[in-house]
Amino acid sequence: MEGSLLIFFLIIYLGYRNGLIAKLKGKSPIVWVLITIASYLFFYILGVLAVLIILMNTGQIDLTSIQNAQDIAARNALSERLMQVMGANPIHYITVQAFGLGGYLLVRYILERMPTINIPKDNEGVV
Image 1 (tube, helix red, strand yellow):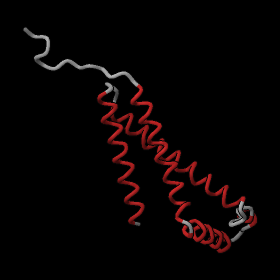
Image 2: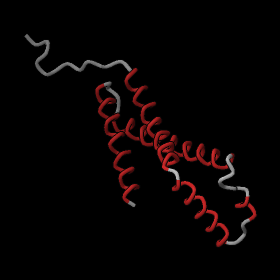
Image 3: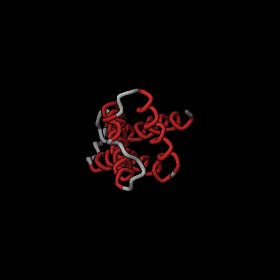
């Protein structure tokens, strides 16, 4: 549970950082925070799928049996096996997190490439 809460705060913080950059660029910070969160979650899911495909190709898990599992007990056993395999190697978790951070970095890159809008200060230009 602590890891989930930490990831939640990480996503909020990363969104906040991109929101600050968006504000400097003259864009709506709230929109870019939401884009950052959506991008992080999208790439996180892509990371999970990439790890699942790798685990299926190496023969560590067999997801084809989930189609044949009619009862709840068989599906629960399969999900327990999946959690064991994913938790046994920390590289799987790190890979998934790296994909999520890649989503954040993509949005940050897009924001940093935008032109900065110079907003005049209150007394600037007044003689």
